[in-house]
Structures are given as C-alpha cells and as structure tokens.
Length: 363
Image (cartoon, rainbow, N blue to C red):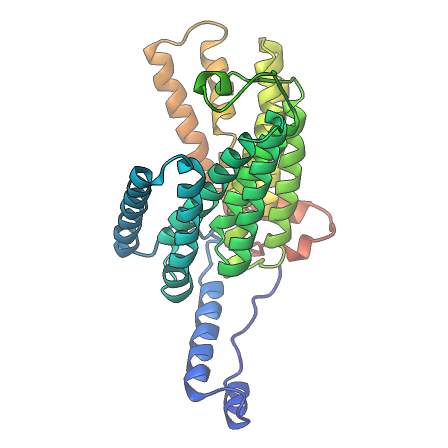
C-alpha cells in the first residue's frame, strides 16, 4: 500500500515568507490547502471514489440562469440573424461562453455553471463549423469528421485554459463522433436542407464495433494516464479521469459484451458473463465503480435470461430480476473494499501497481 503524503512542513512555509518568496496571505492559503489535502487523504478510510457535480444549490441556481440566458441570446440573435443564423449564432454563443467562464470558472470556481458553459462553447463551435462545411463541396463523411474533430480540439483548448475536468468528457464525446464517422458509409446526395435526407444519409458498417473498441482503448489509456498521477484522488487529475472512464467503459462494454449478446441465442450467455467478470476485475483493480456501472444493461440482460430464459418475462419475473440486479450492485458496493484488498494482494507486482489507489492492508 502506498503511503499517504504528509502535509507541508510549517517551517518551510515560514522560511519562504522570510525569504520573500511568499507573502503572509499566500502562506496562509498554502497552509490551508496543504492541511485540506492531507485531511482528505487521511479521511479516505473507506477508499471512496470522490465525485463532485456541484458544491451547493447556488451552483444549480446559476446554472439554470445560464441555460435560460444563453437560450434567450440564441433566440434574440435568431430573430435578427438572417441567412447565416446557423453559422453566426453558435459562434457567438461559444464566444460568450468563453468570456463568462473567466468569471464562473476561473474566479468563482463554480463547477456546474462551468459545465454548462463548456457544453455551450463546444456545441456552438460544432454546429457553426458543421454548417459552414456543409455549404462546401466536401462529402458528408468529411464534414462529419472535421466538424467533430474541431469541436474535440476546442474542448481540449477549454481544458488547457480553464482546467475543467468535465471538458475532457466533451472532448471524448466529439472524438467518439469523429471515430464513428470514420467507420460510416455515406450515401451520395445528402444535404443540410432536408432533415430527413441528412438523418438517413449514412449507413453504419459492421465494423462500428471496431470503432468502439479503438476509441474505448484510447479513452481508457487517457483515463489511466490521469489516474496514475493522482492515486490518492485529491486533485483535478482524478476528476478528469472519472469522465474519461465513463466514456471508455461505455464504448468497451458495448463493443465486447454488446457484440456477443446481440448475436443472439442462449449459448452466448457464458461468454457475456465472462466478459462482464473481466470488466468487474478491471474495475476493482483500478478502483473505479463508475467503470463497472457502464455494464449495468448487460448485467441486467444476463439476469433476465437466467430468470425468464428465451420466453417473455412476467410481472413476477420482472420483480425478481430487479431484486437480483439491485442485490448484486448493493452487495458489490458494500463489499467492494475487502474484495479489492484480496484481489490486489493476490495479484503479482505489475508495472504501475504501486501508482494505483492504495488498498487497505488490515482485514
């Protein structure tokens, strides 16, 4: 088990003030930050997976206000916008979101409003560029790839500037769209004037499973890169990894377990169970409950097959299915720590094991 880092030595802080490196106010803030980090590490006696969506109702209040405000701006610009409405309005909303983030993200550190602004920013760039490229002679496939890739890059710039973990989820979402576009065959003649023709202008290929697998592996590698830099999960790196794990798990579970299950037949129940078991082991090793949650649909499908078989489930069967599914997650959540402790003890040393979240040595 990795040792928890201690708080900063007060003597070092006093020496820094005396040398003129820090002011008294900065020293006080640094000491408070050091104590808070040490306290959070020591307080993780249950080895929890920290997650923060918002800090208080004030953030919900402001986030609702921002949604209404940005919607009103879009409506007003739509009235006066003219021909380039789908180009100008999203671009202006993206610029306004960036400007507002200087206050809500950098100055006031509000998480939920920052998520709203980041979504409006990346979505605005995507819609604006999608419309611009749609007017060109490019094929629909190129338009879809370039617009999604540009939105992903824009989300990456947002993360670099504002350090918002959720922006990595936006980046990954647009990267997933771009990856799927690479594995999609588009019918000729699609255009942006007819919504129905645009919606029906592409036909998925069978290798979309491969696209999900490739993206899932890349997203998982990115998530682990952040996780390994913050094994005690007290900083931004861990929060960023959380959002990437959600995308990675969803893509990987659907690519592997989904592909096996959807091929049909009761013979696929065992391979599906084995795949889900492998995902559970990985989730325990990296200590990410969110990673396993992505497979809840297929876990439910396995339980459904075990209860109802090939026939249609009755109301009584559904009650049993829900009880079994709920019991599975409740028991797994309750016994997560001892299960992980035993698993980590049983596993031999491997590269990066000592950089994973520490596990309890005591029974």
